[in-house]
Image (cartoon, rainbow, N blue to C red; front, top):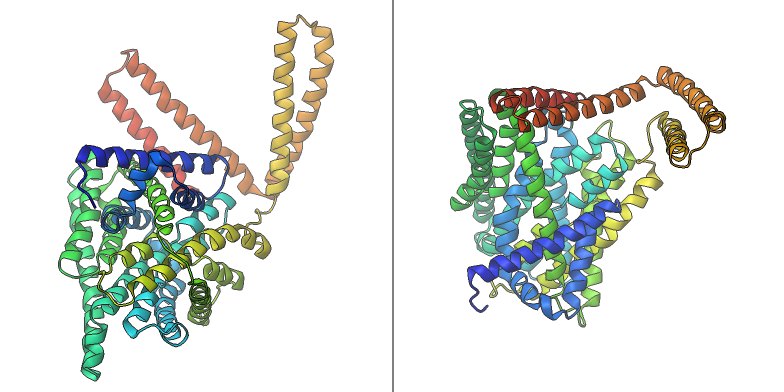
Length: 525
């Protein structure tokens, strides 16, 4: 790659962010999962010759650049943000299925894909198990974004997110062992198996120790400060520091950052963060994760277009089939003895085990001298493309077929009453406006207004009856009112500061009190 100056790199990066942000904004407005849209648009941009975007495509699809951006720049942020907001209580409640999937299903999938590709695709042993490791990592971003838009059970979302956080770390460890040590261990026979197990345990254990130590240390550090901009900086140092330190000592950076973020977001939040700090840290990382995800999935779409599928369709079809079957066997077997876990959830977890940017970044990190690298590139990229587009698009219909996006009891009737009430109130307001602008008489308008007011009175009675049957609906309305009231209070304090009626010190105190109440309200709901 020819040398590019930093100014030009910044321009290319900004262009990438602008395109990603635009596609994400449109997808969110249309209530569609933005990762899938980004991959599709990225693929189209990669395939179509657009002269203005050629420098961007050439730069982003450079293997070293892609690998650095995904693994070093964005992966710690994405893992940290997800783990930061995951309560220990939720993990504890769902530890059975999460551990079964993150460890049991990942190892099963790794073994099934590895041996199947040796047999069916005629891959060498290292090539087969490197591909198997790549296919063991799952990417939950697309599925979780769909879940949020359709209101799926939170426990199911927690299990999928928990599986992905931990199985990414395991998949990376399996990838490194398969790519760099597998043949050496095999040559040593039984002793080699022992070395392999020791390497596996060492990498994971060191990641746990580093993540745990740094998470605890930074949690203690935050207890000495009540300054959320500074504590946000601490979280940045923690996520990237734990990842880079673990990688430097050949431990699992993924596991280190996940453990560090879990401790920081739970223990650290309880001993060293005010509600205001917690809210601001979460908001900061939510923005960072949205930006990272948007850029990552656009980059995946661009990168996928680099592969050449000529005369490889049979290989691609078999690879996709192997991965799908292996995932199914792994999920259903690992969850076989998990009690109180609905079968429809297993179907969603199986089909929702999407492959994403981590798989592509890892395969691009392989040395060009690695035997079978080109074949792995072709099948890995093809599986990721199939996964993100076909599986991602079909998740929503699957949820509907399985009845997992059904609304709660009374929700439909409640929404109908809300819609009619809004119609009638809008009609009354419009009548008052027209009456004033067109000089309509009070006598003419009163009868029409009275008719709408009677309709509203009937709706109010029906709403009261609904509240008695389903008290949660009343709480839902009260929560909305309380939030809007608190936001209005926040704005009112800002106006007082602008008018120089109160000091910044008093305003900050009042803002903190309001923010604390908002956090309490969100915790309750």
